[in-house]
Length: 120
Image (cartoon, rainbow, N blue to C red; front, top):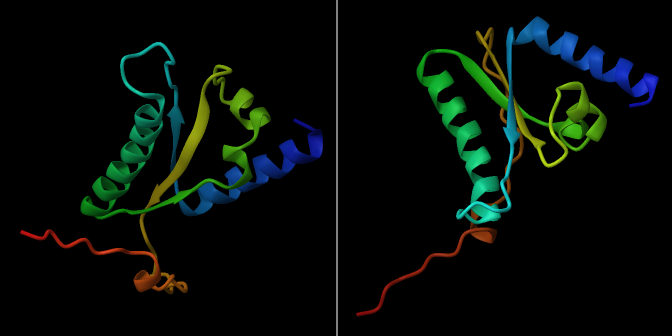
């Protein structure tokens, strides 16, 4: 990782710890020779992240899944000691909320969701 990018990465992680004292790296480590399809192995990493978010919120903490460029950076993966076939599937930040964040614009679900009706 180039030194300027490493410095930026360190700054981001330092700033994050100011707001979220716990950061959990979700790592996908697919095994191509496993009986489970690679796609399902990848999706299970997302399920881990979602369950961690739900458990954090249910326990009274605030949590958010953020990834950004670090999830795509081989240099960041190397810093964390990931094997060549592993990658960062998500970065979950957990802490005590100090306020309620404003909601951001969301897509119109009518444009994304299809309803299926079973015909008898």
